[in-house]
Length: 285
Image 1 (cartoon, helix red, strand yellow):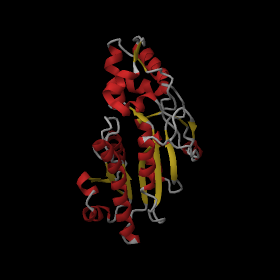
Image 2 (cartoon, one colour; image 1 turned 45 degrees about the vertical axis):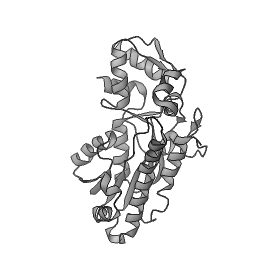
Image 3 (cartoon, helix red, strand yellow; image 1 turned 30 degrees about the horizontal axis):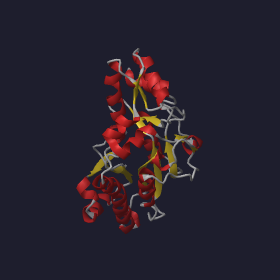
């Protein structure tokens, strides 16, 4: 298949491209410039089979007014442009599938959610994700649409693991805040496998929570990490310190929803790393 991918320099996309190329697919990178130029985008998407939209500005940064605008724009305007261009293409030249990233931040914190939950957050992140998903509402019905609400992605080169490992290896590891906040995560191999699965299964459509079936807290994450590394888990990163560094965005680290991938499992996807222990064992190994 001919597959066009936005956000090709991101962690998920880099791993996904390796997987797709190894399966013989032809990959086309939708550059940032192309995303915001409809004529270039039109030329890029002619005769493409699948569009995978993964672009978006990093959300874990200080939420200045300028940054907030870019975080929202990078998701909604880019999606709007892709949808408009796909709709303009003749049916025989149009992609048959559109797969987009989204985020579990759409759900209210500290509550339990499946894909059928409509208990959405009304904070900044919730508003961004709702607008992000709404941007694809006008996609022509002839195009199969799949949206993955993704949790924290863990892998050897993921930002979360790269930030945690040095701290724990020096014996300075510990929980964040109370440690009781949910930590909805997923292994990078399961992320790429789920997208690969969606590409090749025409009956797959709609919204899927792309998170590990095991619901854990931040304390469980840090405890398991310290156990695998044989290092103490004694310290606490205080809330005020995170708020000094990230401001409002500290909420991303201090609160989260419990999320379960009900539809993903129902439709037959199987996780290679179905729990925290197996995920961290592969990453640390």
